[in-house]
Image 1 (tube, helix red, strand yellow):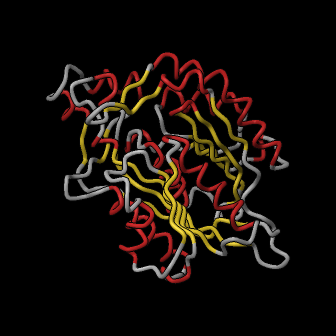
Image 2: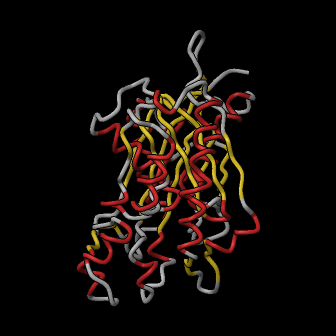
Length: 315
């Protein structure tokens, strides 16, 4: 068995920007109300002609280009999404077709907001076991398609987008760049975040999620660091699921990553579910806020209530 590493990242968002003032014309809310409660100012919303697999393919293509690779170099495509419009072909197969890939294994994972970190761990395990040599791992969601645009408590949160990472086997003498995953769930509280009904709609019990996230998750995130052989103070960046700024800030503080850059992409992008972590990571890399080789904590949490985290080395 060999280690694996992230060699490149990329992201994509639809062009349309929905502001808080736009939302105030749709439901009983205001810019001040939204900023004070969730810290979001804008979000990107895709149109009916922008399916989730298109968003995913754009992000994947950018990650491959950044790595200097072609679609033919990939033998595994994993897409984390909870907003696939169709059951089959799955989103990963549609992405592979859009990118003109050869014959990769294609799988979707639905772990909602923790989907990307679950998919990244799955890619790491697959490469370590020798069943794949290079994987394209994508988190992509169109939360705008499942939002209840009459509910001011949830519609102000959501946004659309995709983020991607290229994972490959570590070379001879190279240190593994993806640390051990710590993952799990709280099945009896799965009802706290839901996408149910026909048509499916997003709903949540906000206070229950807030209490769980801010009290139960920080010690789990510290355990992720321990598994990677690091202390929280060693981290260069913390990329949590971009759920809500009022969750991100206290959780990051309680982890104890005093020297780390904390991703706050939720302010500009809203909650993009499985896309939020890879998008926020890609933007930190693009802006040069973290350097190649830096240790970065990725920690997803949300629907089911599921969580998964690992420390990676920045590509």
